[in-house]
Image (tube, rainbow, N blue to C red; front, side, top):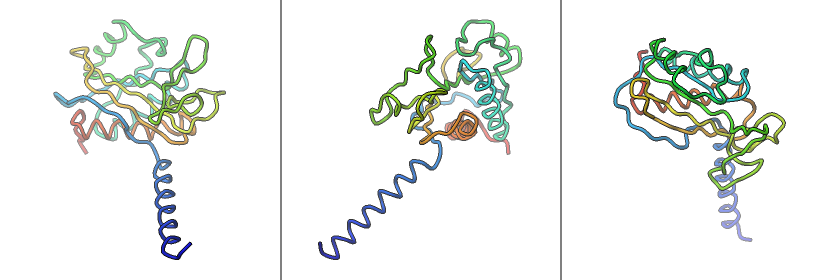
Length: 198
């Protein structure tokens, strides 16, 4: 093998290594849709999980990121007895009475009635332990995990925005929730759903 070819291969390997490092360097939005008709000033956050501890952890993380952007966040778990199966008019009435003009639902995992996890394929077609839903306790650690978020307008009850975050080599909801919250809020700011006040 000549010297030029060795240098080319070494350079290519370096690019691949740097690319791989980029994939593990945090959490980012991978899909997003929706156009802002107005900016939101007070948003309730409801994390969807069978685990109350997970719900509180994510609610607190996203509310903190909203507050840092100048938007008042409401921990929504207090309005819903079981956020894993949240639906109906009562929770939305309570959120409206609290003065919220938006509510963000965030799915932390796809839980089934049997307690297992039914992941959706990852963006590269992965399934099973390598799929993209956030890994449940006692499930093999996934290479890629995701949080799915949807912002609804309280006044119109319509979906205003939806997005999915991806985390490579996730650690835990407690560690990764602030990163996901930052990615979600950053996207909402970028698209005009939130106007930073400071």
